Image (cartoon, rainbow, N blue to C red; front, side, top):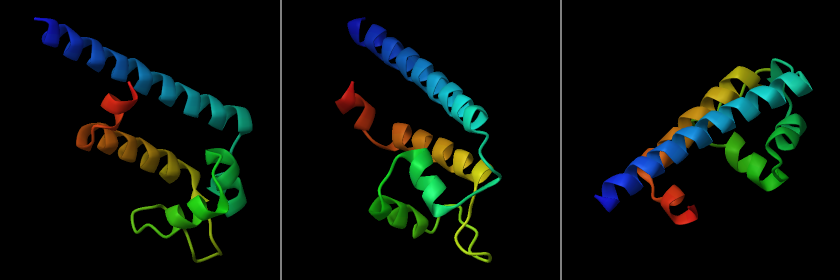
Amino acid sequence: MIQVNLDFADEKFREVLRQEIEKAMGDVVRKNQLPPMLTRKELMEFLRISQTKASELLNRPDFPVFREAGVLIPTHRLIEWIDRNTRWLESNSKYFEKVI
């Protein structure tokens, strides 16, 4: 019985967290009025990451990057990518169990 309640509470927490992240991302996009395409520097500022992490992301085969005009990241595809990978992490790892 206790395990069922913990599982339910954990799922509720994850749902609230997911909603808050989506809301925050939407607020950031609206607040900053992000352009349709981000430069590498804008990506780093948006995600608050270093050059090293930006390079890692930009070299991933599944990361959305448009290289025909330099290195540009379609903003809407970036948000989708973040959403997909956050859900994958929740489903395929114990990361959230360790953090919580």
